[in-house]
Length: 225
Image (cartoon, rainbow, N blue to C red):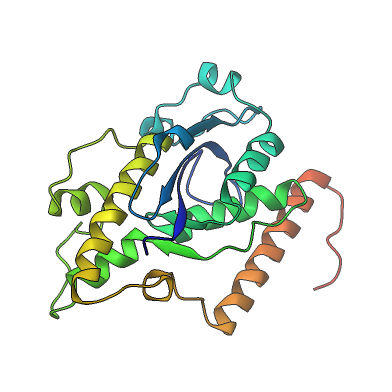
């Protein structure tokens, strides 16, 4: 694990559905072994005409903030470069991966095929090692950090949450590795089954078809089913 290079990533989005909402901000910070070099930390705002969406009450990003943002292809290009040779690290990684996959798809690209480590998964593993049920809210980022005595951080800021995730990861692997040597295979997120991957592809196809119908407007037939 001392040689493992990761990139802790967090997103702020306009809503919860990657089929209809968009990425507003991406925060990331590298993790090199057991170090977090802050010189590589970035907070990237995404410009566009969609506005902050209903989730503005959560992330606090305004129209003025987003007016200073950069085009999505530029932001994704910087993220792709930062991810090269690294493992993607996130808290509740399926959410971030789904939005990133949709964002890359919207510009005609694919999300880089990199291993994924999820600190929510690692926290679940730690809390259920002795059996029993998870306490309510125990997997929330701030609650997970509190268990390790990590200081509170400002929530729902892309860079702040990415850094919080990186610190949590270091605390988790220290505890998980106390019983022996850890490798990437011990902490990476398990690949979904073939059936689940096929279902995801089907959902993405349906989302794309639905968007194309909306853009086409009324009076355009979607063809036979």
